[in-house]
Image (cartoon, rainbow, N blue to C red):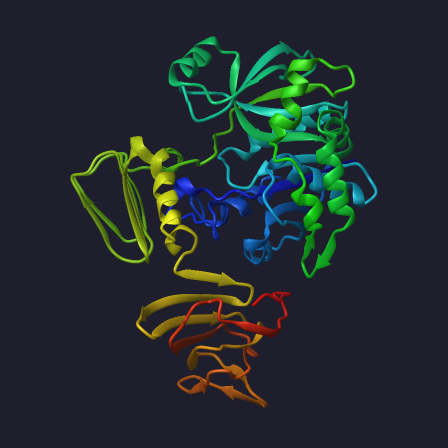
Length: 483
């Protein structure tokens, strides 16, 4: 039986889906089209694949949301290897460290490379295409999946197909084409020999490493050094930083696939494309999400507490409060606790410019939600003003915050639900529902949940400086040693 190792690339930030998607909590972690997040749906996509030994997945991500990814795997009862990139270097280095990780187990599995933020509506069609692709991967091919275009899309790259392979519905790759203008995209659509570039790939781990050594040996060398210096950090594999930073930033297409298509080098593996009509979308912007979601008879999509009157072809999302729309057409309205977006569907690609402007002005809304996830649970900034801040804190059963101290603020903790074990200086004691305790400035303290239900608290901070960087950690169960 052949072995398949799913490789999930989870490094994108999804800025065009702001304000739901943010730098520290990007779109792949969001539940946009189902109860599962896009990442969880990607991991489940291979369930029920016949006659294949499907390994636990390999997820490549950055440091910022490693704990959230680990928690999302736990919630769907999945295990996997989580590889941490110290810095983003595009998809070719990410795939390379995943291939080295896969080979580290002693065999040479077939890698199914999937971005973590795509939607595939018909998983059975997708799995059938994967089954066909495995036949080619076993022969040494690097296989990609071309999406059958249904409109002249100028925001996707394209794959031009060559000769048809005889054994299955697959083609040689003639060329890769970057994002065209609209007129060129229309010509591609009419030609019938161009497919959208999905970013999905299938190949043996050894074949990818061999191809990269021929095309970009410097990337492979840096990745090998980084992998050889990797360390285990709890649930994560942390590759060596200095060597990885020396990697050239290249996509899989630029690093290898374009060489395969253009050079016809006999030393390079064959490149093949399998047409895929499985309801694929990369959810690259708000209009893409509107397209894939079910609509009412007026073409409207609503999520949350939304009321519409005389509206059509509109997407309205509420996360925190009532959203009412009257007489709007072809609009996107997205409400979160700290930001509201209103944009015409024709302008959704420009949302990134808003995010860029927020970054330039140092606005935290570009990076963070009001609700911040931590390995122990989460907190929500309920209110803030001069010299005070109020947070709602939820700690998972059995979890604990770090042993820490603050130079500039006091904290008053009020338990709303559950039981807290509090360390304050040399004392340790329990605080139960409707009780409270006080943490003076400069006092070492820790908050734990010893119970079997979530611990819910209100924290009131006061002092001249209330930033999150006023934390000195002495002990931490999650390896967060930074101050």
